[in-house]
Length: 256
Image (tube, rainbow, N blue to C red):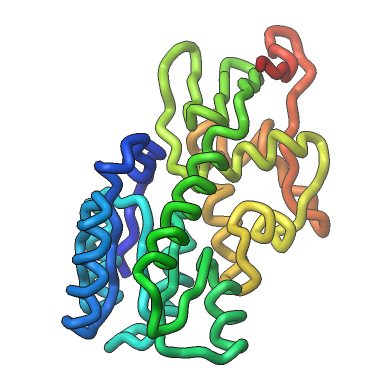
């Protein structure tokens, strides 16, 4: 199973729409070509894959802004692709499929899709939905503008940066969102279920991924990950972010 080790916002979210890249995952060549034609006509770049496996592998190296996804694919289907994708990125996903049942729509959205269009479709509607999803993702990234200081660290959730004594510590987008959630709820315990709901924003998935990302963050910010002072585990309650009150440790502050 191939997953990127790090995703940074500048790799996925461009500010110039003419440079936006849309990934198309569709196993029917005629349909893939049709979607490509009207997207390129509107100024988007496109990359196409006929299997979810190829797309997941490409995402470890390829920067794109949105994914157009079919559900009926050879090998792993669109739902399984979504489940794997949402373990490492929040990139917007628009499902375009011949399936029309309410259950398919519910399942797709539950696994992390952002919108759903049934075939046959209007090219104008698809373009409008894509632009709306891109605007929404841009707004989510730009909404927060705060810096949080704790100990030797400065975390800027709007810029997706973490510094320690003026040296940047790389964070993936998911790590950034997790750290932002924990800091925003400092001194409060959150269960893995709550964290998964708030950070991954999925109804379905493997909750063990929360513990995996907690350990990743601890390795990056804790002096001794086996004896954490910032990201604490409270048995039976979950995880909390703690600011140690000790000499030389700067209290948490927010800067707008």
